[in-house]
Image 1 (cartoon, rainbow, N blue to C red):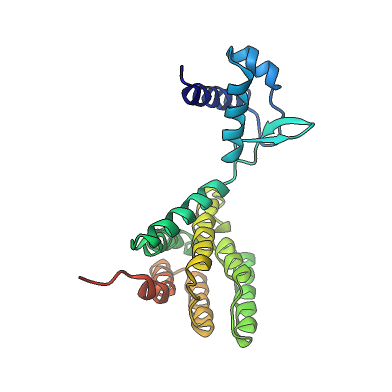
Image 2 (image 1 turned 60 degrees about the vertical axis):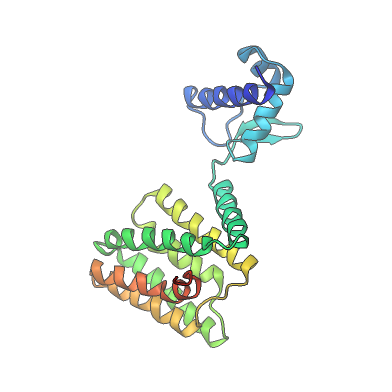
Length: 230
């Protein structure tokens, strides 16, 4: 069996072992020697498999301590999205526009569920973040940290950790590519107004209004990134 195929086979077996043993992030994995014996493969194949799994967050190799189940974060997914968008942009493709449209579709599609019953304490958090945006806007720029915190807080009440991670992954991917491509944020006053309208629509329990507000929030960047019409 070719080495690359052997490594992929071992990767699959290690992932199955994690599932079979119901291991959680941070739990220790068998030693290299134990994996070699269990899977009847050589040390090189085990090490290549572990390095490949470490690259995508499935395992964590701690020098001198062993190998553990990784954080299973979406960071590799974010890196892949951002790099894909940057490379394709250099080839003249509207990759950042496509990335933005996926994020817009996700957020606008989910927000109606948020508007159906956001707890008062979460509304208070969102209004506090809008107030922070307004203070920052007076200085000429709404910070990325505040914008990111707003979008995370908006969907927290749904209790869907995967959804929150995926939405945040698209936010992070767009942010990283925006740096590389020197794409600037909207006017800070417009940013504040958009976020304020989103909160008030959610507070009113008006899902359709909230969805419209979310789409409007993306208007500026959509206009800048839209590919030219033929």
